[in-house]
Image 1: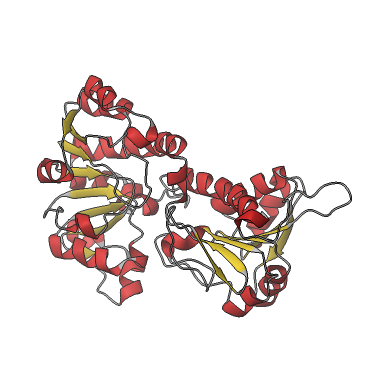
Image 2 (image 1 turned 60 degrees about the vertical axis):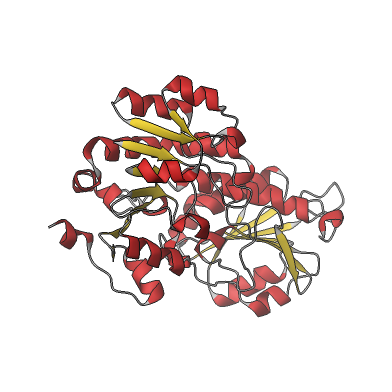
Length: 371
């Protein structure tokens, strides 16, 4: 199979989908790899490293998309890439389609076989290709929040951990999954007073045990969320429903109740955000203010630490990409139920229920198409 690795073009996105080590694996299995010049530079990988690994360097995205049977990316294609997509081409990347109707329709109209990292799901419910970026984004959310709490960056002038005689800042994390747990880990390490809110009480028990009782846990309901958000100095939105649009658990009145100079970091923004006042931002202009609350809603947070993120992402995506390149997509998803759940668009049809529901479009079970 011919595998294409384009340079990411989303604002300030410096990650790359495949490392030179990954290229070696493809080439070793008899595949051809096309890498766009400069694709790995932001993550610290020189073109020469890809060449030594056996890749063929090409000049621009048209050369990659024009020849590759499978495109392996980090982020979803943006408008300038739509015309490069070809019928029958496999696209393996983060897609977040439930929050992107234009891209969803383009993938359908162009007959692209679209497999989303974030919906590949094991039988135990784990999301193996989303987990490493959730870990990165969760850990970043606390340090970013601490940064924007500084007066010079628009915040109220609070030190997250306080000092002796001065209380620590209140950090509220909405969602106790992978993002929330990692946000809490860093915030606790910085000395903050941390509360995690989740609808799953059993998950809260696990977190309380994991953190040795150092954080507060709270069952999620409208009244409880309103109360802790009001007192939050740093609010972290970490809600995830796999492949679906994030629910707005923090309302506009709740945000208005926060103290001026508070900070809200909405990690769920890729899926539409779980804070009602959120809207997507980019690393070049990452924040905005509403009712005195600084909002950070960058849709590709891990892109700010591309070396770490690229290595972590490639570790988990490469085995699946090798499986597709070796067997072809159809046979690979017949054999691997986890990978099959990653298929969002196949033969021009939406095959992931939450995506179809988000836009009122027809859902077609993948099993029916494979039959």
